Length: 101
Image 1 (cartoon, rainbow, N blue to C red):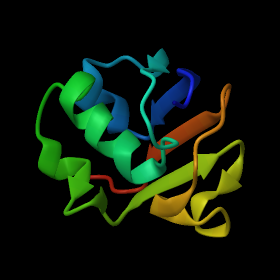
Image 2 (cartoon, rainbow, N blue to C red):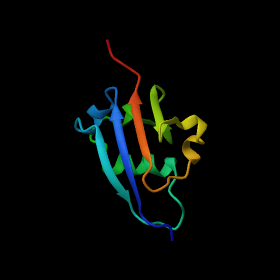
Image 3 (spheres, rainbow, N blue to C red):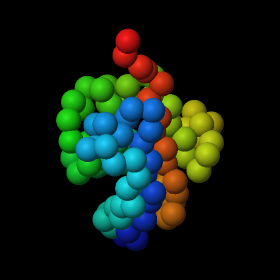
Image 4 (spheres, helix red, strand yellow):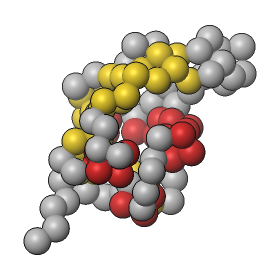
């Protein structure tokens, strides 16, 4: 059984508006039999933190195009994207690069 994982989640560039304007969340993911990965984290965020308009944050199993994801200050594309296995104390940042006009 994998131990619970404490994470710092940050939302910026307008993405925080989907989370009641809260830019930073300290969360603890519960224990589960498999290690947590980014794909499972996105589902957890959608169920537990996302307050409105999920279509502006997720698309299918992943984040919507136009949302930059950083894991410990590195682009998640370098970390394996959805397959990345979360570690205790990871810092995950979601920045929207889409701006309405």
